Length: 170
Image (spheres, helix red, strand yellow):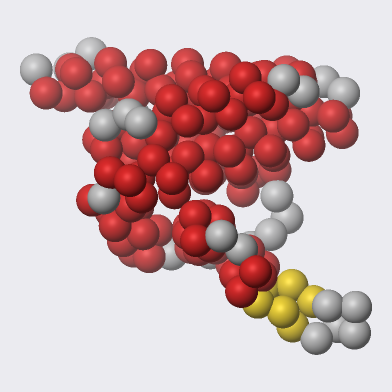
């Protein structure tokens, strides 16, 4: 019964995430952000899967890998820590994306567990991750001029990182 409820929540989350990505890709960012916030308010069990899906999706669309998420260069080519001038929730998101893109599952899971353990942080931090997902969808939807291709990339992430087929009917 518990797994059945979790599956139902995750499936609802997939639909919300697909809708948010579609709206973002079509340029309706305010509606997409509202869906992102709704996602961040879901139970932690579902959020673990949805955060993995969102992270995989963002990495599919981004060229950034590992520390590229947390550092940059100034005009003189000197390294700059992006985290120094970012809000706490975005620092968290960048660290999660750095861990995910580098294949560091332990760090990713630790960050995700820490966020899920605190309801306020969960809403803020994971809301930021889902907003980044929308931002990427908007940017690539405009670039591609074919928003469906952006949604298709999310579906690929759902298939890769989401609940496994064996769990669907439990």
